[in-house]
Image 1 (cartoon, rainbow, N blue to C red):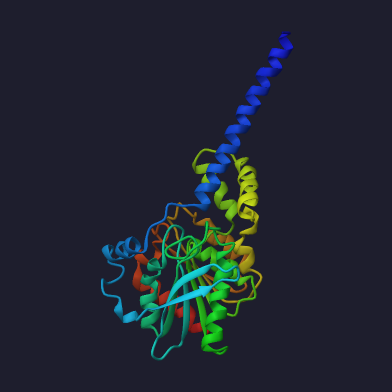
Image 2: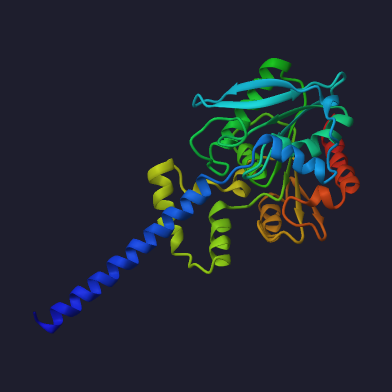
Length: 304
């Protein structure tokens, strides 16, 4: 065998191995994104009880189980807590790997301030059934379907607002760009762009951005969407619905600069509330009284 033939075989083998590991890592990233290790309902509830964020006895919410049939037939499991003299309804969306129980720390002060509450498990989380999570792509449509259900049941004149945390915040912002009938929205530590968030996470793992291409390929082939399809900030900018942007300044999972990106795209209808020292999804925990005051001031200024 000639020397040049041996060189070509070696080069071909190296290229094959590089491509093999490239696509293997890309597949792993998509699996990590789409099939997270989830926490169950009991664990997430006890987590906030142990932190002192909610009382052990939450029976004052009088939760009524509700099943929402999403437009693709997926069953979304939720709870509705009617207020005896409601000022409106707040729909709360939880974060990645969490459940509806993680929304109770917010639900308790919304209820105290006169709002009925709807909490739910996003698809692939809690008791809601679906094959995988889509980081806000399909979840945002579920929020729209929930709002439509509430409008049909409680009337077109009732005030409905949204509150989302982390992935739930991204889902909330995505929903704003889909002709949703709500009066206000609060996004707490949501990402401005899924593609940019994954690029940041790749950097944290010391991997190059080139893995975005492979991840996009497998997302499209297996889950029928791309990273570019989840652009929460750009979707929120399609509407003038009042938006409160909440972010912890010490957030190193969805970096703080995401709040600046969301505000820049939405500054004609958005306000910012930055919590110093708060890590990811810990703004309420860092200062519950101030969080409630700022959020309720925002709501009171934007509803009749």
